[in-house]
Length: 316
Ligand SMILES: Nc1ncnc2c1ncn2[C@@H]1O[C@H](COP(=O)(O)OP(=O)(O)OP(=O)(O)O)[C@@H](O)[C@H]1O
Ligand SMILES: C[C@@](O)(CCO)CC(=O)[O-]
Ligand SMILES: [Mg+2]
Image 1 (cartoon, rainbow, N blue to C red):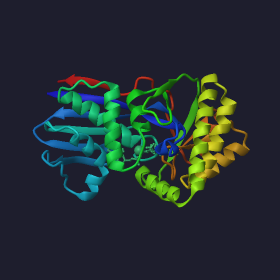
Image 2 (tube, rainbow, N blue to C red):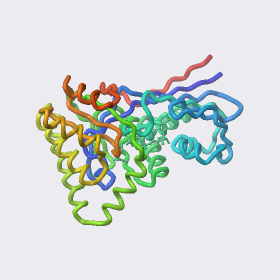
Image 3 (cartoon, helix red, strand yellow):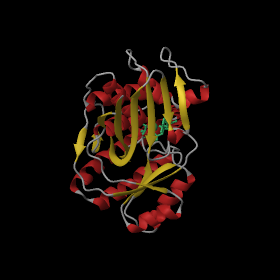
Image 4 (spheres, protein in one colour):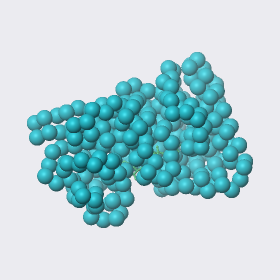
């Protein structure tokens, strides 16, 4: 029986979330939390996701229909990833994540990257990580309507990545940055928050100006990260958080935590990812870890992942 398994790192956004959707640069980092997608030979197509508590959903291979609209919405990223392939073969697709879905850690991207990586190998294709990133980026954009290539590229390629403005290139950064990260549940998905930002942006020119300043912060942060000047990196984290608050994408628990961190003299903290709750990152310190824990944030394994998606063939 053939089985292919893809392991995909999740990610943190260090700087520039939301602004990157409008052409500004951003910096993201792949971490050691993972999404695993396995594809196993079978006579029917079945999708299971333990973290979504969705078990053995049968999928019609012809039109990728599932039994209920609600479930099909929850599985839309995985289904669209399977749909990319025209020469589909039946299989059991199992998705397992080390974190909760939709908390700002790039689970939407990782589900797509993992499904494209494992299913393409199952069908006999040999895609490079860059090809997996490119295919996944288009799928995420199609499902969400809006979005950048940041999460799909970071989870495919691994490392600390800088996405320059108005360019399709990606730059690997070398930095010793060490982070504490944690998350709380959120009510909205990134797709919903992206639609809210678009609506706000259409209301006033000042929002374009905020996004442009975020872009400048990202470029300065790149310089400081490469010099390992963490005091300056931390200061820019607070400023980036403040601008995200002006865009309306933070939430009271996130703002309280970041503001308390600043009052306590921590070097730097900010929201990370789509926002509306979800993830917060701080430059690493014992105090930052205690603060995250005291506010009920679930700590994440923020060790840098340098390799990106890996695929292995398991035969039994
Ligand atoms: N374990 C999983 N199994 C299947 N689908 C998942 C899983 N985890 C996440 N997803 C899909 O990704 C969606 C969440 O995407 P969303 O973009 O809101 O969160 P995120 O990617 O974790 O955060 P961010 O985009 O802010 O980094 C879920 O609604 C679901 O469709
Ligand atoms: C909010 C956003 O910038 C990051 C989500 O992790 C969306 C995107 O880049 O697609
Ligand atoms: Mg997402």
